[in-house]
Image 1 (cartoon, chains in turn orange, cyan):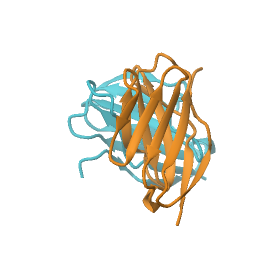
Image 2 (tube, one colour):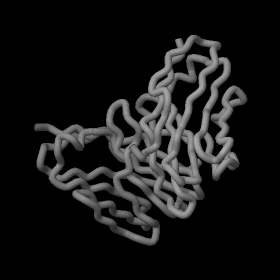
Image 3 (cartoon, chains in turn blue, orange):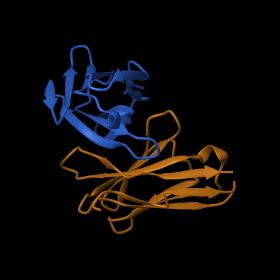
Length: 110
Length: 113
């Protein structure tokens, strides 16, 4: 079946730099996407969402971009901090269910 | 704390025993979801409730698993005759039906020995 996937399993970034986490999806019927952050031993924490009728949405230090033409989603984190170290998941909603990819582990270097 | 609450946070049980997890969703959230997550993987959908009605179940939810939400508020997930393959984190989430944003609890870790 169709599912959401991530381009890279790991990302190492220098503190203070910007991070870009990518995600490819294949279900063109998905109408809503969410990025979650998950720290070790904890549940996924909502970061930001975007509807399929949008191509960009900004939050505090984060921006999500949606390119429906190539079915690509990205999360940009500005001025990455040590507290940003975590696993990041993109998830798509089709109907009421969330479908997750495998995640990208972000490590912030001091 | 007004987030999704799960109990217990950790459970170690012997193979063959039954376990039950409880979830208290965010107040007034009428949708409640159960997910399972194993190490290195994203959460996988198990089932969801709209108020007290269980509207969808994944094929991952074998007949040893049962979930209830009797009064449309808290929910329980029971696993009977646990197997080592059931070891995972069980996540509960909730949302309002008019809003897609889904919030997760901190999860209940199950270890079957």
